[in-house]
Amino acid sequence: MITAQPFRGPIVVEVDRTHVAIGMGMAWKVLVEAAK
Amino acid sequence: VRILLMGNPNVGKSVVFSRLTGTSVVVSNYPGTTVEFTKGTMKVGKKRAEVIDVPGTYTLEPTTKAEEVAVEMLKDGDVVINIVDATNLERNLYLTLQLLEKKVPVIVALNLSDEAKHKGITIDVKKLEKLLDVPVVPTVAITGEGFKKLISRLPKAKAHAYRHTDEQRWEKMGRIVEEIQTVAHRHHTLAERLGDATVRPLTGIPVAIGIVALMFFVIRFIGEGLIANVFDPVFGAYAPVAMRMSEALGSGGFIHNIVIGNLIDGGIDFTQSMGLLTTGIFVPLAMVLPYVFAFYLVLGFLEDSGYLPRLGVLVDSGMHRVGMHGFAVVPMLLGLGCNVPGALSSRILETRRQRFIALTLMGIAVPCMAQLAIIFGLVGSYGVGALAIVVATLFVVWVVIGLLLNKILAGESPEMFTEIPPYRTPYWGATLKKLWMRTRHFLTTAIPFVLLGVLLVNVLYSLGIIDFIGDIASPVVVGLLGLPAAAAGALIIGFLRKDVAVGMLLPLGLSMQQLVVASVVLAMYFPCVATFAIFIRELGIKDTAKSTLIMIGMALLVGTLLRFVLGG
Image (cartoon, rainbow over all chains, first blue to last red; front, side, top):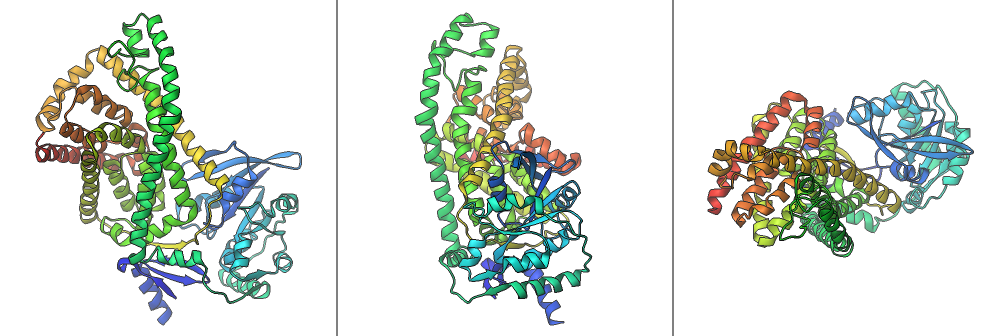
């Protein structure tokens, strides 16, 4: 679940009740991997 | 016996460390690295044991310098207290399982177990203990709950030499968590809502501005309060003693000049006399220490409450434009206290490029609290406007050089990937211990250098060397910067201590414009010797030379521009 993305910067996601900030480029990579 | 505290970052390791150890805590660098760790002692039965707060790590396959150190330290540990975040058991168990492969006795402290309850998480501790086959003790580090039991069960720590592949480890973690953990549905808490609000721009930016404003208000309030109520009275009582020493030394001559300094209007002026036992102790203790103390108190609170990672996320986009990522706010903020720990903490930035940018920007445009305190004292007497010019100039220089370095330097800056811990009430024991360690570091490094600086000023003046250098440097100092030739002395001493250097400007009778130019140039032209040593260690000689050239060039350019803009 995405909880915030300040100024097109890192997206903040909630994973197992923990917030994790992920840079956009890295987030895209994760999405591509997940789509595979 | 050597006990290692190991766990993921942000699981309350330092609070556990603070609980277990007394006041005799030492911060050391791991040999050959700039990674710091804290060491203390505790009693186990009748024996004294050494306790080491190992840098936080997610796995034993290191990805950062700090994690490398954590793995190295494991080789010398006799017992590991594995601190596990009960609110994030599954992720934390990865390290636990890896530790159980290393043939070292392990005991698990299931920390933050109160927070887990609040989050609706129930953990069957007995079953967990059985599945891991090591003692597991629920703890709440902030209140001290479970610590007696943890210490009493320490001798029961058990070593294993399990063998897992990566996949088996994940599988086992999943199985364990399924068997022992239940999670009840519940609504978001106030702290969680607050946590969300502080990373959203619309609410986060006003909060960040409010916090920075509050931070400076509190620092000023505490700093000025300490000066007015503690240090001014103490030095007021000390003045007659110093005067008697002055009389005993004959009220003049070489030794008098070094020990007491110059008498101003027949009396001692602690800010201007420049003697070892007058200005030499007054500057670090009565002018700088109160602000440094207040700054570290506020910073410690921000660190331990969990605000800094959120600030990092919020400013990440902006920081990328100057070649770093959001976490660079940590070295920059620490640098505002003292550039030495600031420069050391730049290791949280992953690449050399980022570290070069961070250190250069810190050296150029992040004055330490010691320097700021004196600048506030000197320039502040001309009003807030003059101070604003100094601060705004440094900020603009920080941004412009950052943008330029980001364009010029080859390579990329990696992105941020970090866990944001929930807001937590700081445990005052741990925050105060950190405050004490930082203040002690300031006292032990600042006072010798201030005394050396004051001594050097006197010796160089009496040998006529400062006048000589003033003559040589006059085309730059007088011609470009519009300052009196004697200000060159301050530039030399600034290499030792910036606060003493800014203080040296006081007797020169500078105009407001000159004072602003001199303060900005002194802040920018070179780091102090202690910071310079860290630069060499972190960047190597070649990159330090590059960084230094940028600083000197920019200081002269900005100083000259400022002089003509202000019309001084």
